[in-house]
Length: 102
Ligand SMILES: [Zn+2]
Figure (cartoon, rainbow, N blue to C red):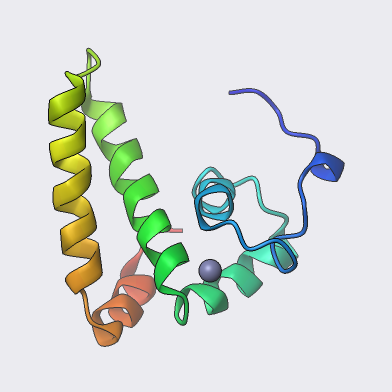
């Protein structure tokens, strides 16, 4: 993984880019002070919540994959994960945060 220079990264509190912010969070590239801010934000923001969910699922799938699956399969998996993420009520999200590995 290529190292990202911190000064190249816009402040996630100012620039709302759910995909980028979730990626920084899941890969551990956010500064510690922003991790706590982002976790509070996740409880209220549907877009960021879904992107973190997708990024974590994507990493899990990638870790188990030996070959890149066909594009149609990737789209089907992404769609299924999005559907699951969007149907999780807020109470389940909070429970997920409490039990997630750190
Ligand atoms: Zn957000």
